[in-house]
Length: 228
Image (tube, rainbow, N blue to C red; front, top):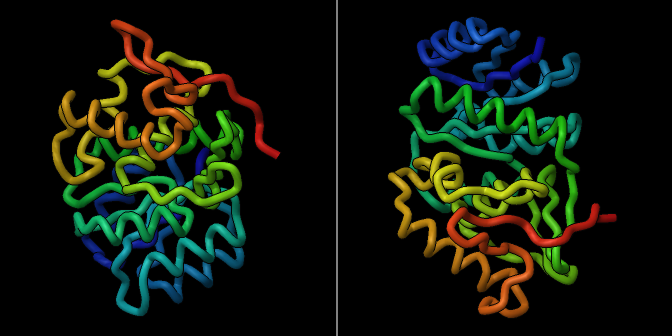
């Protein structure tokens, strides 16, 4: 049984989430504050953490840092804010995903499943065309230099890195990007973000070697190696 660490100060939300997660077969440990979270981390091992960004005695960023320093597990932020800066800050601090309140229960369960699969199956580090993604640390580098990405660009890149040997259809990418930016992601939006991502990570965006187009189907990742 997978053990979820829930850090959420709203008692009603925490109660409902605990009931939902237990109904899905997860064990749940709840902390309502940053201080309580730190105490529970000292004596427990978890498989995944759901962390609210806003806490009464601190914030979820500090909790995420503590989690990542002590355990190699995925962290998903729960936030009532669609503020891009907060999301990017969380991802840069090592969070693996985020979901904006209010969210659909099935979407949360799907995000949890995806995060657990990535940690269970995909290598923590992967290098393609000189670009490396350290999902545990939330860092993207090209030729040793960190690449600044928006929240949606980072999430899109993680989808490719999480399925290095698969062809990703446009429909699948749209499903996984659903409201990651707080709004519906259209086919045109996906095309724009693929273009922006290529401009940041490819040596020649007009002749991509990292994110390859599979005509009539979607995209796939180029030749890759495990990063050292």
